[in-house]
Length: 186
Image (cartoon, rainbow, N blue to C red; front, side, top):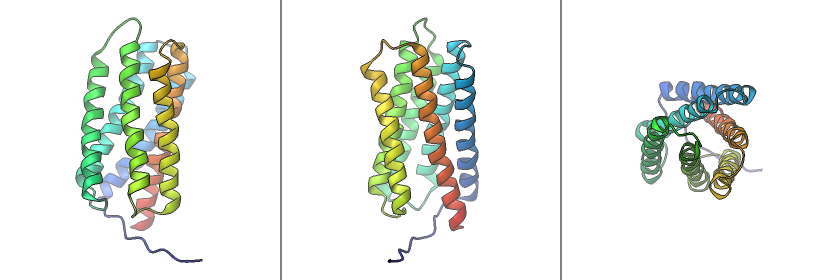
């Protein structure tokens, strides 16, 4: 059995703490959304959009302030972060009776984040193998969920809300794992 040596993560302490709390917030709000499924759909979609906004901020912060990834990955994380923040801003602005545009923007935002997560899992050789596999698995599941929204727009709104909440719970678990990995290496 070979011992692989991985470099210490070069992530600011405050970013690690942000990741920890962001992951907890993603999971908590998503569970609340599932529990309150019969409330106002607009409120539920706004809560999901808030989580998407936080995901975009996380990608942007990591792309700008982390020094441990390759430059190309950092640039990609920054670009995806800005794109997701912009999508979230548009999503907060939209108010329509069918919620189709809101759900489509949420699906596109998740699609971007999950494609990035898969890319990082495949390309970032500085991470441990189990962590890279976890990123690819979570990224693939959330990618499939976002594609389902784009393929089947006629589903019931509650199905979308539940799948989005599950997607964000998975994203929260990945964020918690990232934070814990950084704390372990400090």
